[in-house]
Image (cartoon, rainbow, N blue to C red):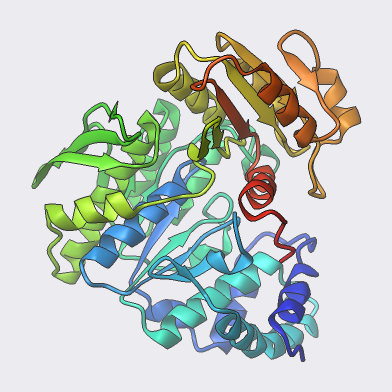
Amino acid sequence: MFETVEEAVAWLHQRRNFNGRPGLIRVMRLLAMLGNPERRLRAIHVAGTNGKGSVTAYLRNILAETGLTVGSFTSPFIETFNERIAVDSQPITDADLLEELKRVQPFVEALDQQPELSEITEFEILTAAAFDYFARINVDAAVIEVGIGGLLDSTNVLTPLVSVITTIGMDHMDLLGDTLAKIAAQKAGIIKSGIPIVTGKLPEAAQTIVAETAKKAEAPLYELGRDFFADSGILDGELFENFSFSDRTVRWPHLRTPLIGKHQVENAAVALEAARLFAEKLGLSITRNDIKKGLDKTRWPGRMEIISTEPLIMLDGAHNAPAAQRLAENLRKEFSGRQLFLIIGSLATKDLTAILAPLAKLPGVKIYLTPFEYPRARSEAQLAAFSGGKIQVVSAWQEGLADALANLNETDDLILFTGSLYFISEIRAALLEGEKNEI
């Protein structure tokens, strides 16, 4: 038995590389040993290729403004491991995390004695621990982010009050399938019988799969652009996106979000519709003031996040082709006429060619590709194949940053770190904290 939170997290990390066999049997058995805490949660379940972290952040802040105690389960972490399990946006304390993992450990060891249930993974354990913790402290609401996919994700043991699919695009093809239809089928796996499902703007092929799945499950479907709406965001002088929201029952004008980009307005709209439906299920009312305060308080590290204004330095965890396309669109719209320096670190499992394609077309851009400290990160040698033209390979991100700083012409030129949330976590720790948090 471990005695410190560092030992507990190290024990959890040892199970990171277990190749979890498909299916929910292990996490279901662990939850049964814990008394099935997931059945006591009033939850919103959030899936999607991109945007689910932002939607989760919006939801937990909006719901908290109504007076609810809100638990949230997210991945990966950006600043500290504890942030993955949070209550009212505050990460679980070391003491509570240690207590929870101590509670779970004996059950995990018991499962390891049964061949068909052995090698339960880090994510499966953490999912069960989060559900158990939220149930034990009796949160009023739980916003649960899917890890990967949906159908076979360990969070899919939930029967929520509202389900959400933010976006669907080509990512994790090795696990979810090599076509949009196959990936959509995995995401649509979170749809439950009779449970409302809210979707963002999905490609037509994906929306068809989601709509068919919802119809079979008799789950009411609410689509952005059909059932609820957000006007185009306008970036103001404070770098807030301004917009209005409406659906068949409400209109909330003159809202704003500090998360930059048109896609963040869409994410906010998805969150607002899900929050309204969730409150309706609980017999609560959400006011425009609740919405406004919740949106204003929302911060989500690593999503078009400005960490310096002189010089202008931003972080964005665009880690797949759809996210890179959205990032490029936002840079064209919000930062046109500026010189752009992009420092990119990417995992070897990602399609870097597809990520680079829209970014390399930006006018006035220079791209630095860099290795970083993560087991699956592309090495300098692996990055060499992508060098040429606007794209330069550097041995470390500090080298790219130094070159960008030396070539800034104007104070509003932009230096942007992107390519992977794991990379962003490293950069954020180095530039904002001075040293990397080892947990």
